Length: 425
Image 1 (tube, rainbow, N blue to C red):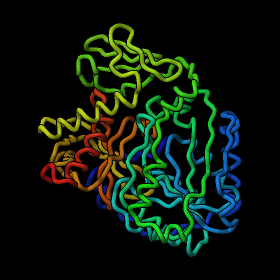
Image 2 (spheres, rainbow, N blue to C red):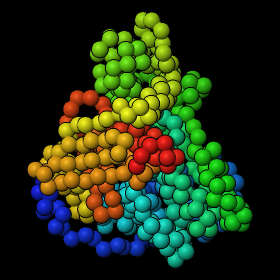
Image 3 (spheres, rainbow, N blue to C red):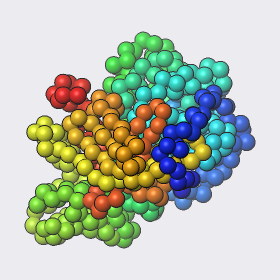
Image 4 (tube, rainbow, N blue to C red):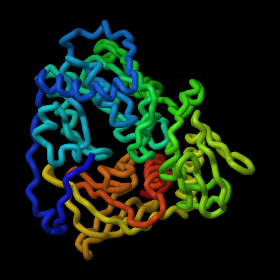
């Protein structure tokens, strides 16, 4: 999938009029049916099936909040099929509206900005369930998982559940990550996909639970490990490209500790500094071709990288300082490419400068609990996004090192440290 990109100067983009807020639309039966029909081929190819748990408690015309884990693009196809013909609005990132606003609104999409405070989103969700009598589908993780485990949930999710006051339903997918992991460059694997759709809480149960209790329940339900599932169920991924791009996630060598020298290609991951090579087996394990296997489990390697980043933050050695191409989002007409710049990330937060000195943006560590970052974003490249409710800056590193995963880890750990007063903010 691609996105419309227009070249403009920074001044021209900042001068563009901002779009007025629009209330959500209830998707018609035509568009609901269209989504289901367009999803049929992919679901058939994955032998998709769904298990329903307690869904008899939900009335046929009763709006609900549906929370779904976010693994790959097939997620929406799954929801469109198993929820049919129930009308539902979809909370999605605002860049998804670029160049196709009319269609997205008629599909029932509600735009929001990832990891940016958006009070208007709650009002739109309330309008959908109360006035439109439509359910709301939301991916609370907001971003795809890098390593196949759950990404952080917002602290506000429990409060949102209580404010809506409608039944809470969860959709949990199996196999969606293994079929199309984000790091693998949109190369689909032959993997079966399934889902559980479960009625979690009634309005009465929500009213009687505290926000903390709801958050704890959701944290438990959104705890998973896709690689562990693959290993335990002996799911074989035989594609010869299964390790392509794995260096985007496993960017640091556990043998020589060098960063940005890993290369995932074919079925192996190799360090260009020390030469150590790991095979990604058909069942999802890593095996060193010579010597010790430091981490046989990809999420364990990723957790080690997180701990390394946290230590760098604590001792003050962490610093990202890279050249980037800069795009901006200020409306739904286009992504605007505005020029070159430099992105710096330290314990003080983000600092983006560029566009011949006209752009100078800073973002504090406490502004967001995670970071909108992506691989091969709309086929433009690996991306780091920062910004606020008025403008988003999409930064595309122009160097050769893999920095996206480390930057997300640093932003998440920095937020935790800032919240507990472990670091100055």
